Length: 173
Image (tube, rainbow, N blue to C red):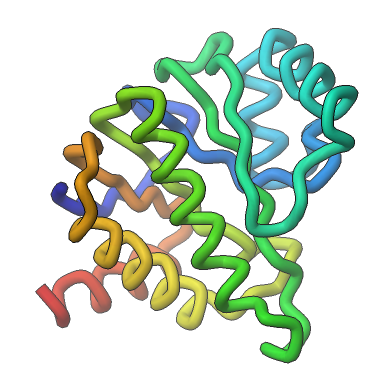
């Protein structure tokens, strides 16, 4: 599995799986979650509603998947990142679980390519540097498993996240 960094809009990624930084309701919100629901269309919301009705939402650190609707992907994996509480609420383990569970679902779907946003660094307030370290380390650890995923993209909308990921990925190749 290779890891690539790109700057841009995750909703434009032509991959098998786009990962959504969702909230526990799965009904859309702001940031990347809102963008994915808007561009993906009603099919995503309908499937998220069915999941919510079946299991009552999605707990922090867990993940579920739906169709990608109008997005240029096959699936959307919705994962709920932790809200930052100064590192006092097991945030790093929960964030790592988001990446691991998303990759496990991608594997179960036979996905070869997966695009991740910067989970929990928006309204959830996770410090960008620390979140990137968890993301990169968790994906690198997953490289050592028997995975069907061939390529993981970290997709950064803003320059600050892009610089952080670029430094982490190039410093520790």
